[in-house]
Image (cartoon, rainbow, N blue to C red; front, side, top):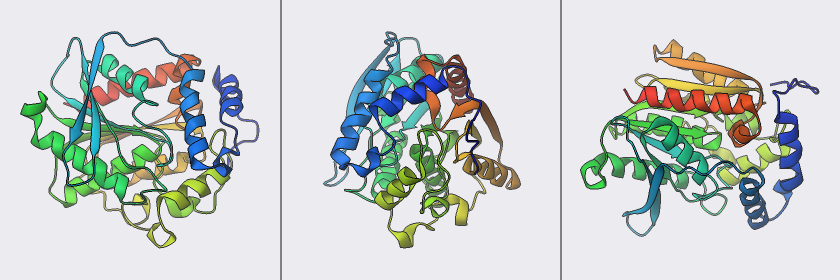
Length: 311
């Protein structure tokens, strides 16, 4: 998707991009993965947000053969209603961990008043497709089967951004095809849904260059897997009997086309879907919620829609 060389950013976004580039330069993908991960972790410190004081959290190990799987359960001080949000983070399948997204998920919990769970998973390139996807499936299945033991109630809604949103779409299809956990909704931010389109990079966009896309693609899946329905859902995916969706797209994002196409495919299959294209925002912009009023407002909208999907 063609990105204007001089896009009209929302207030605060231009400064946000400059700050990100100073901490995590556009060519960082050329460095060793361990260095990339360290730089990515520093981004959280570069954009401080107020502490969430009305939420507690605890880590839970999910038993599953010899692979340790972990999730973090966030509980609001005042639970508004039954319902479970499961957040699957972005980071190109390569970057991030429970700590890099801790404050974001705590905010989601606080803003919705719902129990919220962050799923951890194995990372690429050390563990390529389908490792991360199967980890997330196992966590969701464990949640579904152990609600009483975990003190959880209500419907499950999957939430996440970018590569995490990719896995959410695949997880919704997996749960349907395997007669697995019932998913009541999917709340997506800037989903990446067609790796084949981006395997050779693509149009550069702020904070997501063609070089980065090519790198993440090669890390996550082998070339002969890029058309796999659970890697690139838009290529061969079947979208019948999927849960309702809220899709937050960003105007200044080369991946916006994936959001638009997925929304259209859902509607073609009579699946309820709402697509909101946030003006002047860049890819997976939620990290800028503390410096851009527009991002803050879009994040609050996202939280409300996630809440609504649990009904």
